[in-house]
Image 1 (cartoon, rainbow, N blue to C red):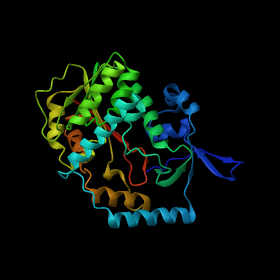
Image 2 (cartoon, helix red, strand yellow):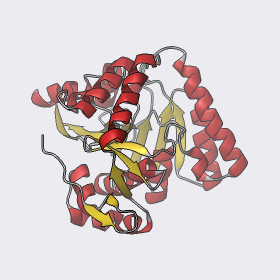
Image 3 (spheres, helix red, strand yellow):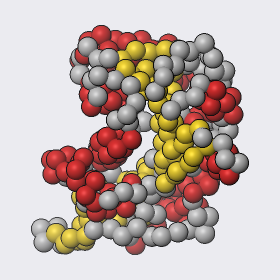
Length: 323
């Protein structure tokens, strides 16, 4: 696997090696050209501090040790029944905050925490902007949505949660209909409240990806996507994938952690593999899409983005459409 280069500069003020998330680096991470990144993201890059430094020496060793100790004590399991209440309560907290503040910043999911330690290109990094992970997501929105979603009149997000991605779509494409689908009531209430308050062309539908509702109306020329939702199915993705194919969406994409893209001979990757498997996040999704591709049922493209939080990479993308 090709190792991604990192743009660097020396900070005379801090006297340590400081790096930046440049348009060149973003192009390599996203799998596109620097010109395309500049076309969609130049203003955002200019307006934000995207600098970071690598953890090295003892600090890196301590981070690895901390990760190993966490694996010894972590008991959370994805897909357990009690996780329903976790999502219900989590999106309810966002809803309550939005009602109080009427600020779209209140819909940022709590799991996108202000943090300094992230992972990039199989290294741990420390950032100056404590919302660096959110900035990365915003940059990805600007590039990906502009590049791929222009042609589609209706866009469905399944497992939409707080509606962060839906809101960005509404802001970028006010004439598109955006439909947020989720299986807990608090998510539906939050999205409908945001839509009413902000006058977005946005609506919410209750939808269980484990038991898809084939009565859901899908207009022609529709796109469907997930963003960290397939991961929560604990491997039981076939019913949802069958639904997407049956409804003949014009284009589908998934932004998900993908355990098959890690290199088990790399220590930082190996820690992510252990975490992914121990939690029970979905595995096998990309190989299943590859199998469909090889049998000439779908056209498939995928890319590892080499970025994530301290535990795992959650932003790999898979794009497909039926042939």
